[in-house]
Picture 1 (cartoon, rainbow, N blue to C red):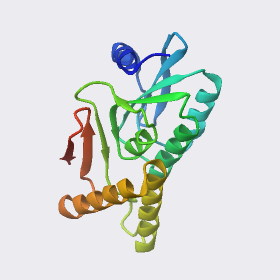
Picture 2 (cartoon, rainbow, N blue to C red; picture 1 turned 90 degrees about the horizontal axis):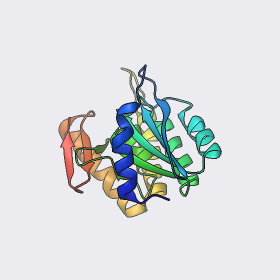
Picture 3 (tube, rainbow, N blue to C red; picture 1 turned 120 degrees about the vertical axis):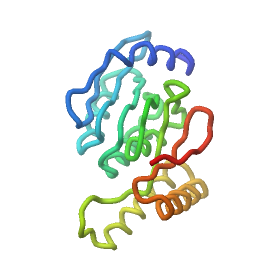
Picture 4 (cartoon, rainbow, N blue to C red; picture 1 turned 90 degrees about the vertical axis):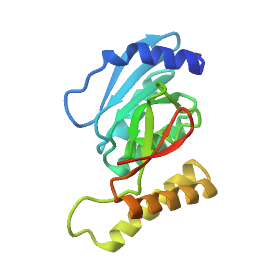
Length: 190
């Protein structure tokens, strides 16, 4: 089994080998090393990604998944996270850029790490596209986000994250992100 430094080094050396051909997220295996495979997930999180991830995990001994995603479907991000949590001993998540739904996915790995010093993970309150989204729908999505965070982290951290994201959204708008880099500093990004 590789340590975190080896994992990050190998992922850094091989990340350029992966390419995505569309906006929808793709899983690409880029390298086999010892008893692990390095995979890259690139593109937008879309429905069905969690099932694809589970099939990859079930057939491979251990995977290192580099995430390079602007986000996408919040509910699928939660599903990716829950899948990761179920197989936590078989997968290591490495963030290159993991925002929104992809950032939520990244939170599911207790050992999640960053590809390099500029790599970033970002979150915001989940929202739905559309002009006429009923308020109760937004409230349900907010509840689901809070519940997911509570399940992946703990109640106190989840509450603090939800409050911070709500304050950020109120101040900066729904597209503002609360971001984290390897240095551990929380930043704001639009």
